[in-house]
Length: 242
Image (cartoon, rainbow, N blue to C red; front, side, top):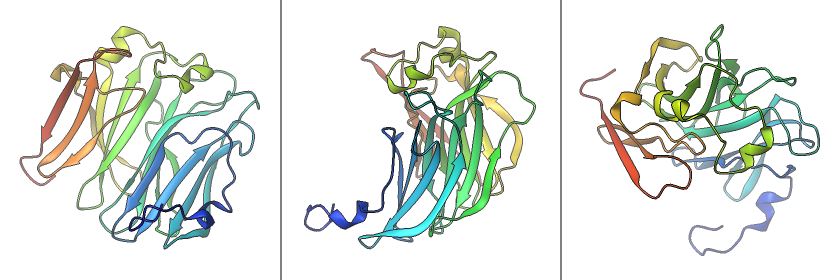
């Protein structure tokens, strides 16, 4: 839509090729006046595909992460997020499970305002057991990123068709005890050990992670589980420069 008039800009989508899964992965950078959108498909494309839009035009650059799909709804990418950084570029995280039933793992990439990988896709926690899912991220002013995700000791996404729903049927212990925060640099290196924030009493929402930046830190919204109607808000203050 045109922000001034509210009218649809039809030309922006003319080169868009996608399956049925948009993943809600979209971000806007006011610095570079650029939208970055990612789509993960089960057939066309069988990949996570990043596209950009600026000034009413679809950008020619594309970046992609090769995945898999069966053409019937199942695919390797289950969930992710994109955020704009302080200088006009972007970063993204997503969960990917290899075909054949391996646990889902968390990947990171940084992208330029012209939709090119600055840091190619990189698995964040090499050698870690279990699953990592439900990720989001937020930026620090110095170019680092705060990554929020849920950790499980086993492979908890056994039915990939469940990821289209608001309830992934996760064990209760994963929801209440699996929330983690980690700091990642622009090259996808994890700085220090992830922190378990489940003890705050407001675990991260898995299906849609609501991590946001605040003037003095970060925050997120949490529900007790799918279908619950009471929301909790967590506020994490940064008392000094990290």
